[in-house]
Image 1 (cartoon, rainbow over the protein chains, first blue to last red):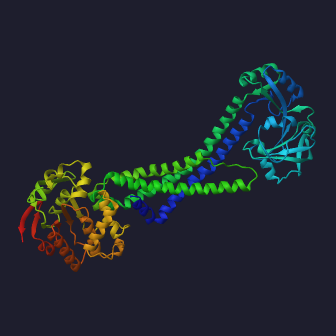
Image 2: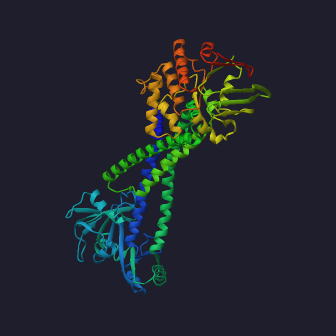
Image 3: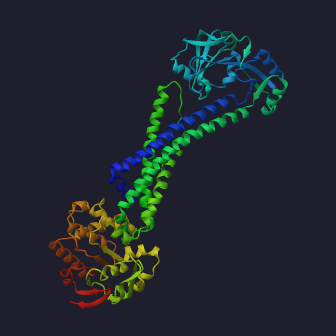
Length: 381
Length: 230
C-alpha cells in the first residue's frame, strides 16, 4: 500500500509540498526553540555537577549587597563539618555591556583553590593559576573564542565604580596563561583571575561576593548548610539541593514558554494537513467508493488515508529537523556563545511529534473516507 | 458446488425507498436464476429498477426483503464487515464511467483489485499482464487512464473485474460512454469471455447490446416484465 500512498502525495505536488512545508516550519521551530531550552538545561546540569559538593554562602542582603570578607570565610571554616572554605569574587567582565544570559564574568579565586573549584576540567593550552600569580588569567572556551585569545595574549577587564552621580571606569590588562576546554557550564564564559588581584582591581579590600564551603566526608550538606546559617551572622546559604530546585523552577518556566510556542507552530502545520486531507478525500470520494466496490475493507481505506497524512508528517519532520539543525549549527559556530544543543531526546520528540501530528490530523478525513457508502460514493460527481 | 446449481439466485427481492414521506417501490418481488457461463442482459426504461437490482446483487445496497444467493451463499444476509470479502471474491464490477483510478497506470488499476484480496505481488503482476494482454492492451499497460481511449479504459475495467476470478461480472451500462464501434467491440469481448465460462450480467438500455446477449430480462415498474432466451 505504501506505493499507493506515495503516488497520492506526489500526484498533487504543490498542495502536498505546501502541507509538508507547513509541518516542516513547525518542527523547525520545535528544534530551534527546543535546542535552546536543552542547552540551558545542560549548562545548568553541568554547572551544578561542578559545584554539587559545595555549599554556597551568600550575604544575607543579596548577591550584590557585599558584606562578605575574608573574616567571614574564616568563620565559615570554623563551623563543625566544614573541611574547607574559600571566598570567590564575581564581577561582570564588561559592566557597560551586559550580554545575554548574564554575559561574561570575571571570577576571582585563590589560585590554590582553582583545581577544587573546577574539578577535572582540562586546559586546551597553557596552565592553571599558581600562588603568586599577578595579573594573570585562565579563560573559558567561549571567552577565548569571542576575543580570539591565545596563551600569552592580553585581555582587557573593566571595572565600574559608581561615585555619587558619576561612574568611573578602570581598565586593566590581564595576561592569559591558560585556556579551559569546553565544559558546557557557566565557566565557559568565565575569566579566572587570582582573588587578591581581583580584590585590588575592584577596590574591594578583602571583600568577596560568595563563599564556597566544602563539607567534610560523611557530612550531610543540607544539615551543614543550616548549621552555617546559625553559626555565621548575616549569611544565607544554598545547599546544592536548594540551588538545584531554585534554578530548576526557572528552567521549567523557560522550557514551557519555548516549547509551547514551538508546539503551537507545529499544530498550525497539523491543521494544514487536516485541511489538505479533507480536500483530497472529498476529491477522491468516487475513488474510495470504487475501492470499496472492488472489495477494499474499511481498514484498507483508513490505512491509505492515515498513512498519507502520517507520511506528510514524517517528511515535514525530517525537513524541519534538517533545517533546524542547520540553523543551530550555523548559529553555534558563528556566535561567541553556544546557545543551542540538539540532544537525541529532542530529535526523538520532534520526530514523534511530527508523525503523531500527521496521524492525528489525518484521522478525521480518513474516517470520513472509510465510512462512505460505496453506492453513494460511486454516484457522486 | 454442484455444476448445475445456478451461480446467482434472486428470490422475491423487493426494495422500497422513502422519498420524504412517500414510499417508492423501486423493486417488487423479483426472482430469477443465472447459470454458470450465461450472458444475460437486463433492460428497461430508466426508473424501471434495473440499477437498483444491480446494487442489491453487488452488495452495494441492502434489500427491504428477499434474498440474493451467489454460489449458493445468501449474500443478502452477511454482516457489513464480511461484504468486502464477498465483493472482491465473488463479484466483478464494470461501470458506465469506467471508474479507473486516474493516478494509476492500466497495470496498477488491475493490480489494485487483487491487492485488496491480499494476493501476493508476484502473482498479481503475472495475472494483470495476462489479463491486459487478453484484452488486447499488451502495449498500453504503463499508460494512465487519461492517455487511453474510452474503449481501452473499459477494457482495463473488464480486466480489473476479471482479476479475482469472480463468480459473476456485473456490468452497469458498460457501453454507455463509448461510440458504436467501440460498443460492438466491448460486447464481442464480453461474449467471448462468456464462451470461456465467465458468467456476465449486463444492465443496459441499449437494445443493440441486449440483442447480442443470449437471454434478456425486461424490467418495468420494479418488476420483471419478460424473461426471454434468444
